[in-house]
Image 1 (cartoon, rainbow, N blue to C red):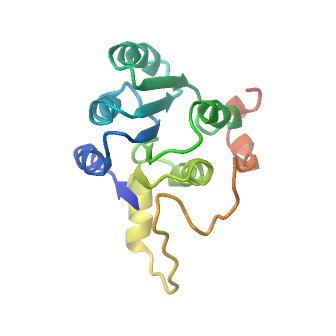
Image 2: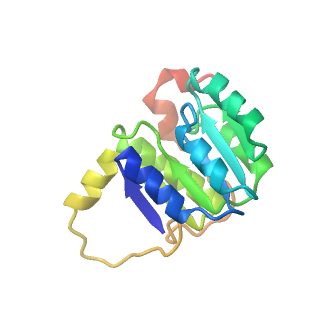
Amino acid sequence: MIQLNYNIKLYRKNLKKILKPTDTVIELGCHVGGSSKIIAEIIKEGKLIAIDNSPEAVPKMKKLEKEYSNIEFISGDVRLHNIIKEACKLTEKCNLLSVDLGGGYHPDTVFKVFYIWSSTFKPRDSIIRNKGLIDFVNTSKVEENLNSKNGYLDSYGDEGIPPQIKEFNLWTNSLKNK
């Protein structure tokens, strides 16, 4: 199942419904750990790999790592191929992919990040927090029936880490030398 939310309270409420105590969760855009703490408390027997590139995330997430033995924090940009590789060293699969990259901005970036990460880790469920994607889905008319049953798109059949998307390098100079 792939779930879309924008309202943070609804997003967290749905996280609580989806999570199971033994789940492995990859959280893209953990920020300062508000949702991470909720996830870690529910998946007591599981593992949370939380990733964010903001400087303010580092001290807060390092503190949460000490409080919760099931949290692994990676400081990095989820659009970069080496960050996916780093996550692959920690797990080959996840039960839940949680994507919260700015909430309302850049639905194209959010979708591409979701696509790459979900294609790599094949989650049972995915939950994405993005206003633009909800607006797109709710205003679209679909005449064909493609429907994935899992937390990734079944139309993507390849295994392993997909090749780096060249467009990520075209969007911003800050990604070119990393």
